[in-house]
Image (cartoon, rainbow, N blue to C red):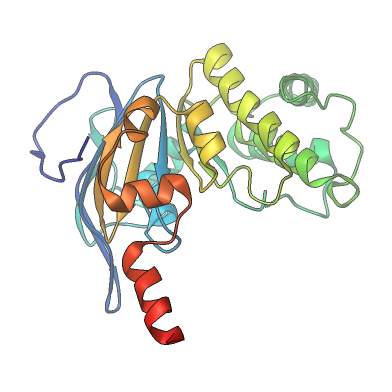
Length: 270
């Protein structure tokens, strides 16, 4: 299934939690997003794939307005947010949870303090309430009892799970995952996949996952979109992507070198 990059900025999808409308972004001479349109349906997990440098992380940053588009619009629950002043955005961002690629835990804080940090910053909960919430979030990722440990003493998989517990500390409506399984061995990566499914099932969250890991893609995705040269070239289900005839999509899914690149290698070897 091919993805269309054309939609009306006035279109209104009642099931959409977030909408990107005709979003363009350029860094110097590099065009990263070229009129991208994307609606994120409530309760759905959308996985964004594409080659390195295709703009996947830039797309995530636009959803939470950490980066503003050069042209286009970003909506959250039908409220335009890309043109909001920072003081107003600060009230909306706690509704988003962000799992950074490398976790981004604070080494100078214990595990419990890391998870408590956004709660302290954005709520008026008492110390007892904060302690209870930290315990609940760690329990959801299977790490209750690690509150007094230091991130530096935890394994890579444990750090990812701690970072995920922090991402859900404020009970967000939308969770953004940037390469959640990078650097993990297959069993630990599958633990993260299972947690993504668990949070969707138990919390009903909407999720956007950026990943190169096709095993993860096929396990957690309700919908898959592929970015290529600033546009979406595929938008469909895990079942439909395996039958996609677009050579660019097929090469990515199968982990094969693109034919034109392979030919250039062979010609240079002669």
